[in-house]
Length: 381
Image (cartoon, rainbow, N blue to C red; front, side, top):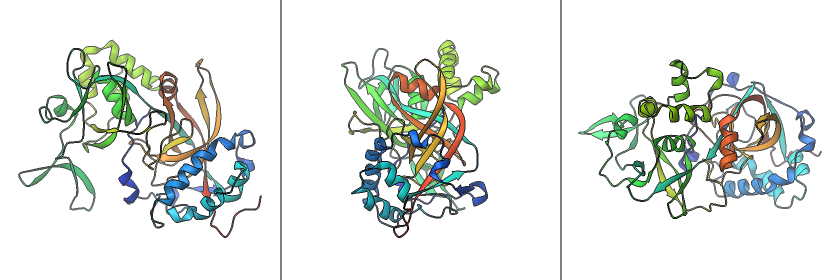
């Protein structure tokens, strides 16, 4: 995947300002629902629980809360912009009628590119010993964000009154955080930890069979370097053969180079334990549980949180056959490498098949965003 491979970020982002790309970089045009290929076949009733979750979340936010989105968008950038749609949802019985009445589709004129992400399940122990030697760290208390002289927010640590970059992956692997009691658990495989950091959340399976969920709780502020790109540059993988599976397979076949390759990506993610139900997906940046096949990570500077997105792309099935996939999903998350118009990451769930789909989803397609209509002007379709 990605991934951006992806890191699911904390809810605090809702209150933050996002840098806006110019409208010339995010060109959209209004279209009718009849322009959405496959719309008539969509099982729209399946998205009603997702819509109700979103409206419940929006009701918890101050009306003036920014959901993100390009400044050129006509509506849907504030929590209050959903008031009409969410009010109508309370009594709605037919999902298709509700959506066609309260939302206006806008075609994203840039070609879309979709990848996938999932919630990993990895073996771990709460104590170090035997095969469990790789620490999974919680956020250190000296990791801080501060405003630089140019006004930008930066991540680092204070050392003798001077603000310095935080330890990179190599320093942390070398023991920079050892002995500080930051270990949530110990995992068997550093590659598992690396991909967990890419996904941003996951489930730890303990020796007694219990599972613990961990979620993203910050990163060290170092730049993100995709190791797939590194392997291509070193002629270890072909550019058209990079996937989660191919990267993992290469690392497994070259155990003596694992640390060197992983540390080419100085970015490092920290975690916290999460007590949410394991029957649901992890919480995304919008603050609600992610739904397999319905939740997207998007560039929030262009697409507001909660926005329904009509996705037209291709996905592999259980037999490895890639076929058309045209469904309604929702902007509920963000990712480190999910930047630009038409870029999105589909949450595929958890388990073996979810990992397979996420690792093999690298497809072009088309994207149409559905913006809520103002309360006074629902469309009488």
